[in-house]
Structures are given as structure tokens and as C-alpha cells.
Length: 458
Image: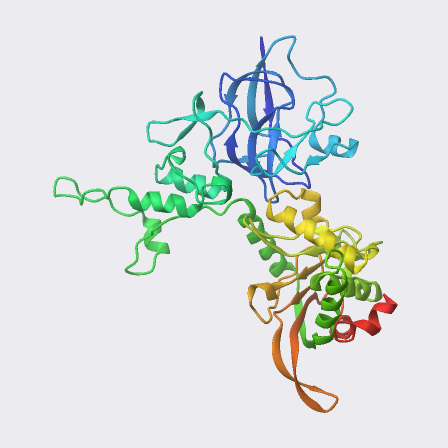
């Protein structure tokens, strides 16, 4: 019998680390090739990592909540001559090029993406994988022990690694909680309720002096306030923080905005919906169509600014990958419709709905979340009029759409109440100047104000 060490693979797009959310196997388990062994959260998606080896689990390198780096050991498997690595094992990048894809969902709908095909030689794996139902043994402190397993219980339904970390920090056994989320998923509120229900520790006596707060608490807490909780910045939130710093640090951005009367556009959309509710384009689908048309006229806003050894260059693309800013349970993500310029408003409506729904379930692939060349942000659904949005680097522009409200408006010399929204465009001033950015913005605005005359030219 020999042992094989499986290192955390490159999960795509150059990601260098991932947070270990949950082990799907335990030491002593017998596993097969391509069996999911761990659930990890990258900066882009939740994924299940399959094993390239068959055999017996010898060592699990890490505990839930740990940050693991690509290339470091993930699991050690004891193998025999008959159940070792399958011939032709490939890393994820090689398999992606060979056509192995990422599964769009799993049986329980809570795990996100499933990486298929480690150790696969020819053909793709089909069907859905089922998450292990083996529960972990309680440790001495009441939290879960990934090294052991209990045969009689099922694993708690927890999606967020932050919820797991919060429970672990306060020694809350997740298996004893009843989730209040969809399909019984345990939410942060459930853990907080359990924390509030834990008996308070007795006040320190003369023989038991209170422990002093760490020096760091005095440095970070305002005078008179104690630290209530420390939550590590990991996963998607860490990615968002890094992306925002990158954008603000490297892009000299400028913002333009314009108010738009969308009364005619809303009337048009209502008529189309009355004619055929199933195929009528949505308001956002119509805006997306206007945006792609304007980007074809002003392609400089659909480029990327790239630093080179010889200076810098603008990279133009043969097509538009339209990113849609999406507020998901995991944070802000921007899945992109590939070649959005090829779709009509009706087709864009379907593509956007499908992609946004997929993003909110945490099932978008890394490629879908990083391929955008221009971003559309409909923050009006959040109830705000406008915002100077931060550019989604390495893109060079982002257009925002505010809420639609009734406002007094002059129409043909007469004052009237109209449906008005605000468009904003943040752009990279290294790439273009205000004249071009304003021309793009007014092109979209004109199409929104007079849709029936513009659509014939699109």
C-alpha cells in the first residue's frame, strides 16, 4: 500500500487560494476516482473538489474555515496497486481545454459548482453528484471534528463559511440547530439566536480576575466600547475588497450622469408584455440592447487598458461580453452575457434572467464571472437614484441605472408628470475623454427616451 498526496488544484483563472468550507469525507473512508472530497469557496464560486485517486482517506490537510493555497496538500489517500491514480490524470486547466466542464448544480442545490473529471481520460462525467451525508463527530469543545464521522446523523445544511466560523467561534453545534432559511438552511440569524441562548459566564471574583483584553482591542475599539465580534474577511468579500482597491488605486475614473424620461419606453414594454407576456423583453433587456448598440458606436468603452513592458496598450475585442452586476447571498458578483451584441432585446432578457438566477444560486463558473468587457448596474432596484459606481477592473467603464420616479418634466413646452430615471457612466480617463463618454451616455439616453424610432436602427 502506498500513499498519494493530492494538492489543491488551480481552480481556474489564476486563483491562488480557497477557503475550506466543509469536508465531504472523513479519515478512514473509502473513496473512488472523481468522488467529491471537499467543498471550497474561491473568490468567485463555491465548488466541490473531486479526488484523482481511489483508496482510503489517510489524512485531511486542514479544517473547515482554513484558507488553503493552490499547490499545498489537500488530502492524502492510501492506495493499492489496483486503486491508484487513473491513467491520464490532468489538472483542471488541461481538462478545461479538453472540454471538461463545470456542473451547473448538485442534488441538494446548496453546494454551487462541481468540478468534474479529475483523473478522467477521455469523455466527460455526466449526471449529478450527491453530497456525502456523513456527519462529523462532535469535538471536545462541542464543535465539529472533520477527522471523525458519525454514521447515524446527517450533516447540517449550512452554505455560508462565515456561518460555520461564527458557530465554531462560539462553540455552537450546528447539528443541534433548526435552519430558518429555504429548505432548512441554517442562517447567521439562527446561530446568533443560539449564541444569545447560551448561559452567561459568571462574573469574575477576587480569586478569578478577569483576563485583560488583547492590546489590539484597545487599538481598534472606540473608547468605551468592547469588541463584540471579529469576522475574517475571506472568500467573495475578500475578492470584492481586493477588486475595489485595485480599481481605485489604478484607474483615474470620472463620472457623467444624465436624467432620462423613460415614459415612452415603459409604455412600449407594457404593450409588448400585453401582446405576449412569455416573450416580451424586460425593461433591463431593452436597456441592455441600447447599451450594446452604443458600444458598437463607441468601442473604446469596451476595451481593456493593459500595461506592457513597452508602456501600455488598449485591447479591443471582437464582441461585447455584457456584465450584469448582481447582488447575491455571497456578495456582489458580475456574471457576463457572452457576445451580447448578437442578441435581440427579447433574447437578452432570457440570457440575463438565466445568468442572474445562476449567480444568485452561487453556480456561475469562474469564466462567466470574469469574462465581462463592460458592466451594466441596475442599482435602481435597491431604491437609490444614482451612484458613482466603481469600475469593474480590468474593464474601463460601467453604466448605472437609478430608480424610476415620477417627476415634473417639460414636454413640447408643457409641464407634465413623467417617469424619469438617472443614468451614470464611470469611465477610465486614461482610455477616453469626457466628450466620447458623454456621447455614449446620450446615445443610450436618446434610445431610452424615443425607443420606437431607435429600435428600427438596432
